[in-house]
Image (cartoon, rainbow, N blue to C red; front, side, top):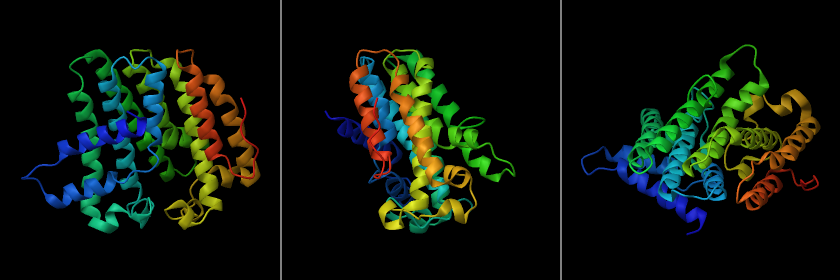
Length: 289
């Protein structure tokens, strides 16, 4: 089965666990709205690609890890869109959850997806309990504080912001989780995979800052210019457009070189190179390496 098929099947199975005949139907609908249709599913794709590069010795566990990671990402988007944060009306080209279902159900949807993510990993633990426990640890670490996405959001409430720490937590954390969880699901050590995840995450954050500054809402499928509106730290605000573009190229230049030695190293390098091409502004030359 192709990676996108594996991912959608695993996420669909996870959402089935959250549906019940005697449960609140509007919450179930809000959960579906939060997760489907998905975006590019980049994080679970990276996770499964790393697992496959490392041998994919436990595909069921890798699928569970991929779905759990995407559920955490979707939960973060639901919460990010709330009026207390970005107050966004549109997400992935449709109404944000709080606009479609109201703020109470949006908060509960995000909370439910976070809990469901860890339930998915727990249910998959029987055959490889040690790996599953490590997957739970990594996902929890990259979701909470001090270095997870909760910390990333919290940096926006500080009067003085460390841009590198902010980007590493807000965006990089789940990319680090993706590379490390993919390796762990396949029975490999997590530590050598941190740098690749951090580099990919940093590149995506800078690319997102550039898109927010340069693209239209129609092109993005969500509000544009939000960093300036909310006075958030960004690579564009700190370095200007040209500086942010150069910073993006510098990050991507080292990403492929940071891939640890593994049986599928060449194929994984091609995937990272393809992502680099997609996120690099079109007026730049392709990333090589």
